[in-house]
Length: 396
Image 1 (cartoon, one colour):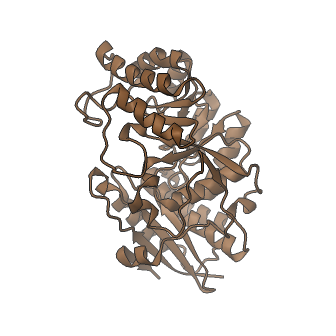
Image 2: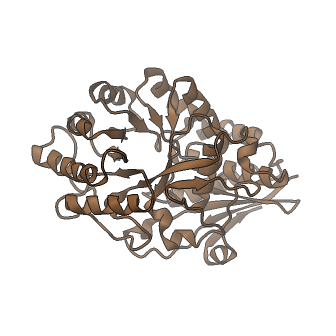
Image 3: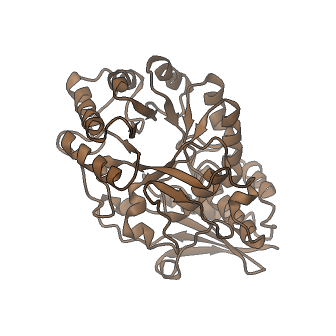
């Protein structure tokens, strides 16, 4: 089997608010045997989708004519024969990821088996999920909600719990008193007023959902070391499940300082790439839960190695999922196979129609629990309607 062409797809969607910056980029690899594979370049949010599109296109040029079943050889070529690949970084690693996921999709389809079988088979049949980012509301309605008052946070949490979720994640401090997201400085010594705003929101959630629902405190690295320690110590009494990205994710010493001063497990990883990026965090024990994004960390080939490394250090895994449905499908395949899985992230954007209608299958949990997809390969593809509506560049 040979790779004959690669389509780089800027996925069309009809988000109409600030989420219009939401731009999933998908790679489709085509072969001379008619088998195609889909992968996602994990830069749908933030700034960088255009660069990810270009990176995937550049990498596609060096794999034309190769055997798609040889994913290790292709991964090694992308990293070591491109000069910049060994330096890594978000854009390069994301481009590699999209291609690598598509190769695994081809392999699974060619062998008529789900990817999890190729990763070692199931270690579980059910996948526990949490409701992620409830500061933007919860449910399948508007993507414009911005919660301000503690009671609004409690109400959103109760909606998620009523749907069967027994865990949720919230950034309780980044929204200011006027509903502005990530507009104020959260570095250095924070005022008691700022700290109490976040604390009161989390306290309202805890009081509403009771002691048996796990609450993840998301920080998005908006805080620095001093602020993260201040806030972390304040919320310890609320029984926080884990404390996510309290500081900048490429600074192991500062992450370690937070871990040493806050009695909450630390999680990070969506902006850490490849096993080389994770190594210092494993060695110093600063992260208890890793959150690799399969669509940026190097793809399925690399994330399996990262998860196996984590297992050596008694670190559990929550795959980071904040992308299109292909990203979700890739996460479910890995989570089914690895023994050190902890919980799956269901981002609220995954519930919204512009996302769900872009792909053939709408994988959502029932009462907070996923079934593992059993279709060959990844088990997810863009619809023909989405492909026709999207901007596509083809490398032959």
